[in-house]
Length: 103
Image (cartoon, rainbow, N blue to C red; front, side):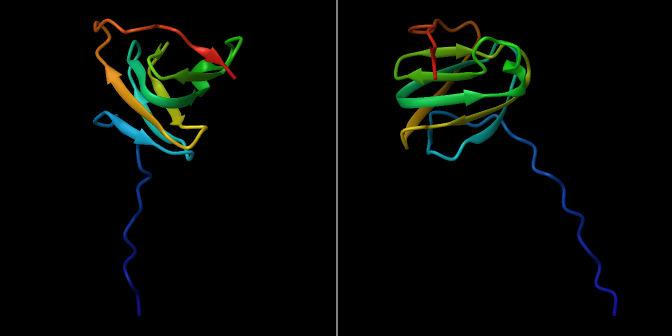
């Protein structure tokens, strides 16, 4: 008896609706070049192949800090201390503080 198999398609990372509360397990997010990621609570950790070649390829944002994606890519975002709140801002929106802290 042949049972038809449903092909499984890999899930493409999506740009989420924010604010998004994240935990310690990083989530894959597809971001456009120039997309501003803001930490509006807790602490966030960001990494991506797009950051390879930078002096620091892991970015840590504390509450109130922002990061601008240098290129369109998949970024992995998590909360190293267990809880962090991510907001995506329009590239033209003024960020409170465009600072980043290295690990």
